[in-house]
Image 1 (cartoon, rainbow, N blue to C red):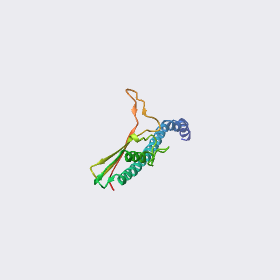
Image 2 (image 1 turned 180 degrees about the vertical axis):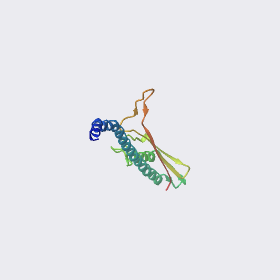
Image 3 (image 1 turned 135 degrees about the vertical axis):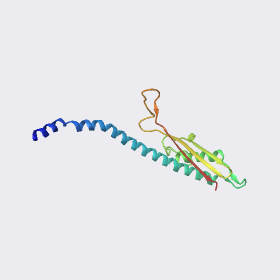
Image 4 (image 1 turned 90 degrees about the vertical axis):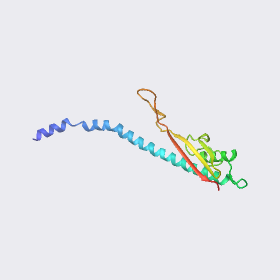
Length: 154
């Protein structure tokens, strides 16, 4: 009885190492995916906060009491875009989210009393722009993030 169990354990000696070698890439991929998802949520949260700051600034400055409606001129639009991108009315050296530009920000009016700021940003994972495909084009990895806020003019 004892000789049989000893022989069985010798034949199973390297199985754990083989199983570990098979599952390690899957576990690393899962860990990377969870990290990238967290990074994407962090970027989206920063976009939402920058969007709220910009629309709050525009809503406070855009109301024209003589006309009784909101008016957005080019100077106010430029400042709002800078607030959305840099966090301040004038351009700074660092952006709120890496790769965000003022071209990604749109400032507009909604009706006569409301203003809208919309930010469209494409999140790029750390591993690159796309995965190579066996057939056809590469699979794009960019995820579009859109933040839109509407606020009544003050």
